[in-house]
Amino acid sequence: MKDFKINKIDQINLEVFGGCNLACPMCPQGIEGGREKEFKKTLSEELFKSIIDQAIPLGLKFVNLSGSGEPLLNKNFEKYCSYLRERGIVSMINTNGKLLTKEKFENLCIAGLDIIKVSCMGWDKESYAHWMSHDYFDQMRETLAQCLKVLKEKKYNTFLQTHHLIQDYNKKDYQLQKYLDNWVNYLGIDSEIWLAHNWSGVYNEDAPNTTHSRHQEFRERKRRSCGRPLANVIEIRAGGLGKMKGAVVPCPNVLGQDSKAVMGHLEEDSLINIVNGEKYVELRKKHVDEKFDDIDYCKNCDHLIDVPESLVWTNIKKRKYGGSRVSFIDYVGSIKNFK
Image (tube, rainbow, N blue to C red):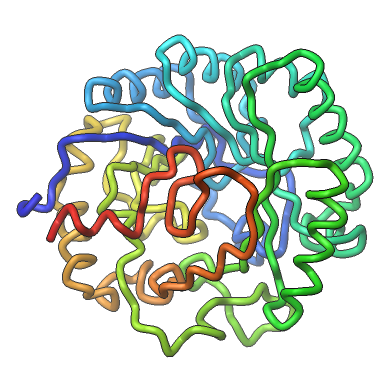
């Protein structure tokens, strides 16, 4: 590891669709300027299979079929799930749930999707309409209740979970209790509740109605590597620069500024060449040396601040701060591989 290269890939976060069907104000997909157009593309089935086939000999065991777009907008999505299941790879998605129905959910279970995590950003009807950009609070709870009933009756191996954000740190206790009352306990579902973050500094923190940032509360804490560039986990976008697809970037939090962070494109180079290429090696070295201000897309990211309490509450087994949602790989602890 002294050459700042890796020889193993345990997990890929593989975005299959770069666009989104919502415009949530806490997400760069929904703010003014939004996501760069070049990254709002569909990952083709051919490129998807090529990436997976390259990663399997390197140790691939987990794939998060999400990135920063809405994965269910990819019309071939169930084929991708089946491809992974046939190869014994654990898969998951993060979805806003707008396209989720009882029937769609069952099809995903049959296709072999292991974990479906639904983002429900809103502790009550009014806040959900604001933070999810559509008034779907009651319908979403009913859909999730139907999906849980399917799991209970048909005994599929899929796990259904929800994901929530505390938007105002000063009202953390209130929002937490509302999330527990209106989602977790109401549905009897596995969930995780986090403090909101600032997406690598893309927000103007002085602007009204902007999501809260950990920088505002914890700026006095010493920065350390988030560990993502140092882990055996690779982030791949559906889109890329120009007409390219399959851009490799260091982490999901570069959303809104993906173009600054492209390590290479899998349409024109191999996976192992890109993850051990000059750009990636230099990025890992800067993270180990803690030269974060030299990295434009890292310097203002609040994931560099150690805030274990940002995981406010969870009942998901093995889910911990600093770890992957699907594999539980310790991102923050990955720096030990290079020491």
